[in-house]
Length: 389
Image 1 (cartoon, rainbow, N blue to C red):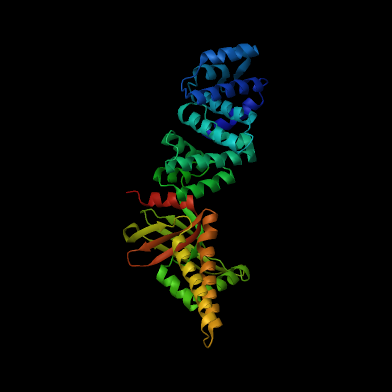
Image 2 (cartoon, helix red, strand yellow; image 1 turned 135 degrees about the horizontal axis):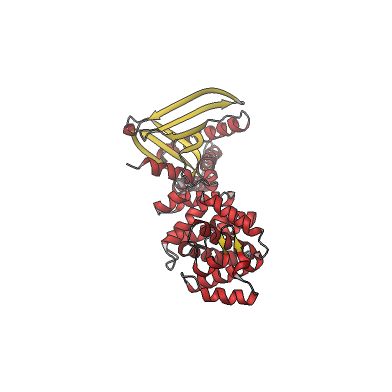
C-alpha cells in the first residue's frame, strides 16, 4: 500500500547520515516553490544548494532512489514518489511551526504543494509531528472550511479536496474530530464524502450509535414543554443513564440490495434485556436523513425566548395585580424553560459539540427508526452510498 511505502521511506531517511542536509535542501525548495507557485522542479536551485553543502550524488542514495535526482527532476516511479513525500515530511519535522500564525501559513503551503507537486507531506504529518500535528490539522481544517465558504477566492477547490482527504485519512484523534465536525458543516458534497474517509482509505459502511426517539417538531416540543412532560422525560432519561446504566447500542448498515439494516439491544444494569433488528429494503425506504450540526437551534431559541418572556411578563403583571396563585404560574413557566433547555442540551448541543448527529430512516409504510450519537462524517458517507443508483 502507498501509505506503508511512504512510512518505510520516512523510516529509511530517518537513518540516513546526511538527513539534516537533505531536509534543509528540501525545505528551501518547498518554501520557494510554494511562494512562487512554481510547479516544475528547479535543478539549478538544487545544484546551488548541493554545492554549498559540498554533497555529491553518490552521498544521498537510498533504497527508494537517489534523493538529489528526486529533488532535481521530480520522481519517476512509485518508489521515488514515496521518497519525495518522505523528504517533504522530514522537512516539516525539522522546521516545526512555532504558533498559530506559523501553522496557518504552513497549512496553506502544504496544501498547495500536495495539490500541485509530488512533495506531499500531509499523509505523514502524524508520523513526523506526533501530537504536535494537532495545531496544523486545525489550521488545515480552517482553510478547507474557508474555501468551502468562498472566503479564500485565490485558493482552488483542489487544495480543499486534498485537505479533506488528509483530514479524513489521518489516524490523529484531533484530525478525525475536526473532519467529523467539518463534514457536517460544508456545503460541498464531495468534500463531505472525502472528510468521512477512514484511515484505511474506505468510507464508513456502518454507523455505531444509540437508538433514540425521532426528532420532534416545534408544536410537539412546545406541547410537551408546557405540560411538564418534556422536563420529566429528560430527567428520567438522565437518571436511567447515570444510575441504571440504561443504553440501547445500535449499528446501522447497508444491505446487499441497497437498503438499511438497524440492529440494537436494550441494556439495563449491564444486562441485555432484548435484541431487535429492523430491515428496510431499498424499495421500501422512503427517506434517510441526518441532522445538521446543532439541529433545531432556531426553534429552541424561539421557545426559550417565549418561556423567558412569559416568565418576565407574569412577574411584572403580578407586581400590579394580585391573583390567587401568581407565583405558581411563574414557577411553571420557569420549569417549561428548564425542560426546553435540558432537551436542547441532550439532543442538540452536546452531540453537536462532539461532531455527533442523529440519522433518521423512514420506511414507506411510515415506520421510523432513529440512530443518535453517530459520527457526523461517517453518517454523511453512508448516506452518500445509500443514494447511489
